[in-house]
Amino acid sequence: MTNNRPHLLAVDDEEINLRILEHYLSDSDYQVTFAQSSNQAWDYLTNADYQFDVLLLDWVMPDVDGLELLKKAKELENYKHVPAIMISGLSAPSAISKGLNAGAFYYLTKPLGQDVLFSVLKAALNELSSIRSLVENQDKFTDAFSLINHGQFNFRTLHDVNCLVESLSSMFPHNINTPIGLRELMINAIEHGNLGISYQEKTHLMEIDQWEEEVERRLLLNENTDKNASLNIDKNSDRVEITITDQGIGFDWEEFLEIDNERITDPHGRGIAIAKLFSFDDLNYVAPGNIVKVRIDLRPQ
Image (cartoon, rainbow, N blue to C red; front, side):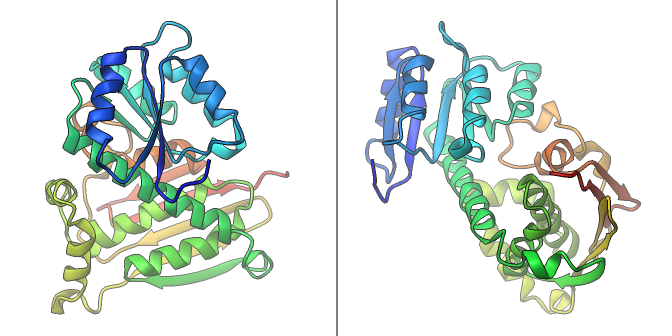
């Protein structure tokens, strides 16, 4: 099925919950396919006529629960990087952490709010767009970047980050998670480091859909026009070590190295922890927090 609108797969065994989602999404720009069981959803996921851009998965279902369905979907080549949003009445922090650690992009608790749903869907589709761009461009600079042993790159804007990450992704042709993690750390260096956007400010900006506009506005301020961040590469035969440095005052990074239960439903704040889990073999910040070092082991393929 081809359609220019983003295609969502919504899975829930209770019809009332699917009707709520249908009501929320009926006048939106999304195309939605509904499944009332994991088995029905799996039939859609393995049908070549369907390609979904976001998965909305209920956790508790009688046949196969949403977490198991997510794990199975991630094993499919064309759904390896498609974001999944878990929806559940389970609001215990341990349950939320379990979903995120399994690879869910986000976790929403019932009853579901329409504004929160649309905000999370937009973030998920932005993430998917970035990943698809990385995948499409991953082979573009493979020969050139395979020759690099040492190098430094300076970056200042979100556009710089996207360009650099797309180029660097060719160094890791078998692991798209590494450039995704680098992108997270580089954006953190710009927004929080050089531009001083606080956690609370970013939460508000994302809620009103003005984060990117605020980043661009602050980049134009006189006190920020000369601020750059840097990315240094040190590569040998068995590993790549990357250091990212910004010109900020640092931050209390230790609380962001793990998925924090108190921030777990915020629209951001999990990127560093996810990167630590899935993107790198080692990640460490250097006090006061404006320098982060990561290591990627080069494994034979």
